[in-house]
Image (tube, rainbow, N blue to C red):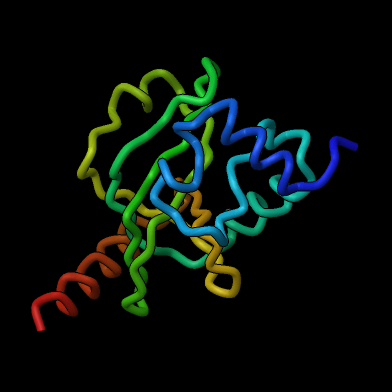
Length: 145
């Protein structure tokens, strides 16, 4: 409808340089931030898969407001239970209350797709607190050794 995905991603980076791959700190394999994830079938599919993805911990590095809904892009340094670390990007709709509580350095549970590893993550709002604590303990014990 609008041309190739590469052109759309390049357009988004031109319109919002703060959402470019370079600005977000991800590599060239990152597909980019969708201009409107509700209209993108790829984004809807990705978000559905992320909601059931593997649990990991993300340390909030930064966030960018995309619109006043507020839709934000959250930038995380993610660590998985398997010891893999990567820069993760979450495209989320937050409430004003949630937005005001964001602070760099916060550790939040996130979900990712191990089979894809495309830098996309989603907040794991449904995560069991006991499982999150167990994951945090596993990661901390690995760092001590």
